Image (cartoon, rainbow, N blue to C red; front, side):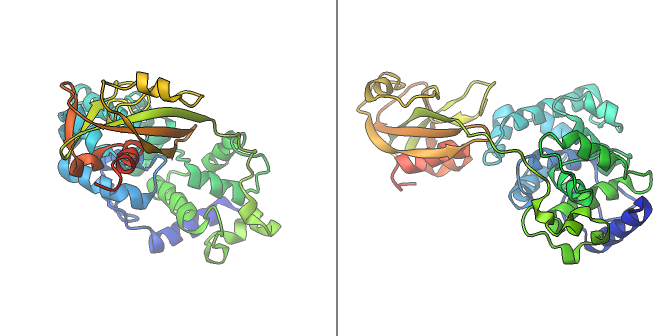
Length: 345
């Protein structure tokens, strides 16, 4: 394989087949996509698919068209708009970063990886992506798609996650000063559209002649993976207090899982199921709490079983929300509310 031939073939394919995404500039465009839009898209796309993230991106970009506009918004408004994207620490970091750019940099993003890394919430990947895509810097942008492409091009036998440093080194060796932003996006598109996790479209791949994994006859077996550890299970209870067509919500503490988000009142989530007595004792107030089923929800690092309890009543410190407005809840609480209200939403 020659790097020059590989790059030429992939960039030519990208010029003809680049995905049309709202945060992108066309291939080869003299004017790059703005750093605010690139950064916003990259934060949203962490652990989220393009089809799921796109409507959120469009909503954010329309409501807060600049980083300074986002920085000036109240936390609760941004967190509510983020609901459904998951990984809510990203939304908190989004606000912290926007406010740092607005207050410390006059609303202008730094244009180097080093400068970007100094911003809140900017890890190595996000800094490299914004530097390459927004500022055309020769940065090494390695996401899951790029890892998969490298593992297959070079038939890397080490399993993930142990192989990550090697895959990053291999990706770095292919970077040149020519079109670094387009190169980063070409690799991403190749992994997303052609070099898919399952059933890769090798017959359509512009660099298949360079692929060591294809030469083995089993490209879909790369990247190799270590056996997954069992996901632990946690248990808890959630309480659905209603009055007429309203539901009582609380705001979770600013730090921790789902920090700062509106939620149903819950117990702590522990390793053992709650007894009826424990669930009753943990209720947010005295009421005629009745069992209302349970839900299962899967987070990245654990699975959760929530027992549901429902009652009618008053709570002076609750955030009363119309049933029609519960869609802004994080998915675990929206699921719990819908199940506990027995289809009345």
